Amino acid sequence: MSSPILKKPGFTLVEIMVVVGIIAILVAIVLPNFVRARHNVNEMLAVKTLNSLASALEMYKIANGDYPEAINDDVMTGSVNAFMPYMQHRMILEARKAATKSFRGYHYDYAKRGVSQYTYTASPAVSGATGTEEFTVDETGEVKASHRPPPADPFVP
Image (cartoon, rainbow, N blue to C red; front, side, top):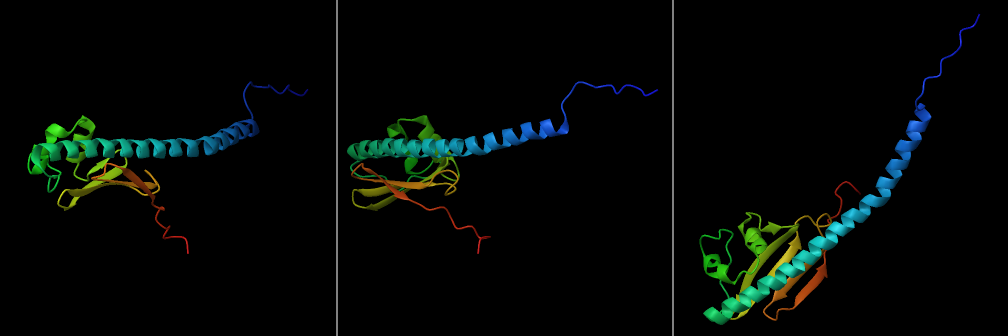
């Protein structure tokens, strides 16, 4: 007598592999969209931050006659202490506190260029990963963008 083969309920290995393959394909399709959306948010925030900084610098100039010589990382010393009342957003102060001067994927650098002239630059913290555009604002208050290509891959000949 042959014993009956008991069929246990469950999925076969092939069925599980098909489901895993479909999930992998969906992730490969959706993930680049999330990355690009993150770049767009970082870039939009960089432009808004530069607009706010330009407004704060103009208010500082009206009150003090000229732009600050430097904006130091330590908000307790240097010209940032005098600059703080003109900062409208706490997030900008937090960005200036950071030792790397980095905030939400962008580095911010201030430079006074001469009498009543300055530039404030926002560049991606990791080019290609946190953003692809570099933004600059000057005493005119106009934010200008320039494309920064991601660095070349050192492993590709």
